[in-house]
Amino acid sequence: MAKPTIGRRWLPLIALRSFEGVAKHGSFTAAANALLISQSALSRHVIALETLLGAQLFERRPHSLTLTKAGQHLLPAVMKSFDRLEYALNDIRNETTPAVRTLRVQMPPSFASHLAVPILKEFPRASSEVEIDLVSPYGVGPPLSDVDVAVVYSKPMVTDLVTDLLWSVHLSMLCHPELAARHAGKDPAAFIAANEIIHVRIADLPRHHLWSQFVRQAGLGALNIERGLVFDTALLAVQYALSGEGIVLVDTNLFSEDLRAGRLVQPFDIALDEGYGYYLIIHPEALSDAAVALFRSWLIERFGIPPSAAARAGSALA
Image 1 (cartoon, rainbow, N blue to C red):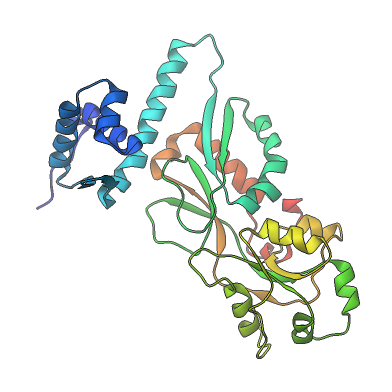
Image 2: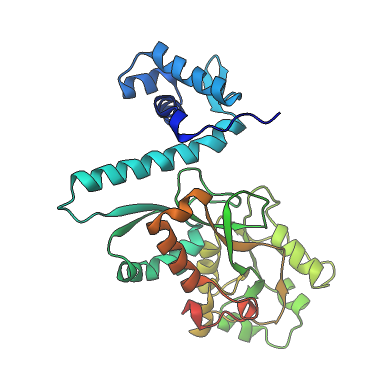
């Protein structure tokens, strides 16, 4: 039998605030001190919330406290809801002061530094009442729980989040033009064998994974690709290639400006498609937030590439 729906009339606001405090501070004692209530009262609030939901929100161990899956699901919604209430209440109290909404935005380091940061100055033209708080964690996968908008480098995910594909990633071999000229006339296998390989690390995958897949997919035979430098981001890997040495396997969309300016060249028309893409992700409840909707539309207009154009890094990223 389905459980009764929890309507607004019965929303346990005090218990939700207690839950948020414990989750943020990682401790009942620290949360109680921050909220200026007793630890026993705080514990009762959280237990009452768990009883109402019929689910445990924390794994309680002698010296640690972690969120369960139910807690991980609830926390982002609670934080965003209280944030919006805080913004709205302060806007009303300070109605003589222009309201400024701060959006916490997550982007991968290479995407942020090479594409987004140079053009973020354009966003205030669309809205002078929204400020951006940018975070750039390493790795792949779902967004952080405390962000309003996220761009993530990921394979397609089954999720209840709102997801927009900005573009599918096609990895190509890039290098300095002088290096390409020195090895002109060589086939791809000989070109790779003759040069230093630059690797970009992908979390939870072997350090040489991308080049292994590239060589296999292109049918280049048995090549020693377990050599060369490994970098945490594509940006660092490309900066090394710009010094004049090494060949790097990266997304041409990210570095289209370097290609157009002639700082990098693509010696062979070969690409690796592993199913990764850059996805714009927000929580469903954020769709009604005007600031989030505006920033989402701006990002899609600025970075979204139609499938027919994704492989050629057109002028939309200039």
